[in-house]
Amino acid sequence: MSVDNPLLDELYDLIVRGDIKQATATTARGLEQLVAPTDMLFEAMIPALEEVGRRFEAGEYFLPEMLIAARSMQSAMDVVRPHIVEAGVKPTGTFLMGTVAGDIHDVGKNLCNVMLEGAGFRVIDLGVNVPGDRFVDAIREHQPDVVGMSAFLTTTMMEIKSNLQLFKSAGLRDDVLVMVGGAPINDEFAREVGADGYSPDASATVRKAKQLIGA
Image (tube, rainbow, N blue to C red):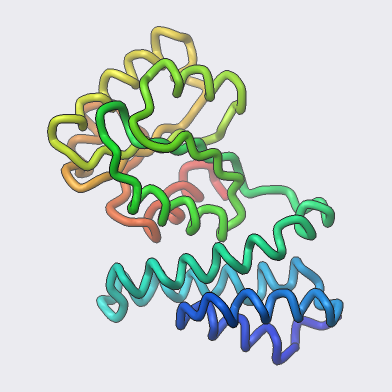
């Protein structure tokens, strides 16, 4: 089917506006009308999330608007994901994500996850309060392209440095790219601890991750 379809424009607008109920219903209607799930993903859903990221960076959207748009994207993705898998769409890469030990903040992490998944990444979320050895085990199990670690407290940010040392001791540091983020984190800290990249927000996370893996 041609991508020139009013339903795709409608889905795009619904996600940008953050209309969770209608975005979900429109996605389901698209499947009923035999609109290709890949068209909905690549021609409506991903461009919508990119537009949301652009508006956030331009100061036109703020965190509440970005969160509700991300939730509408997530809800639509839940409908279309099985069909994307059936279509054999190759993911952009695998991204392993977690909030470090001692820290239970997850809003920023979860937003990054939605944005990354919307950009085509396979996201493995370890959750919050993740000890270093669990990161190590997950790297060995899933062999991700990128490991993302978030810390939202000054008291937990040094866990990132400890984890990087643990990755090195386990012989895994050269196998993965490491990105870091969170309220007290900045680019200088990322360089000091030896991370491969830093991002201040979810939209930048997607851009940086793609840059690091050459996507």
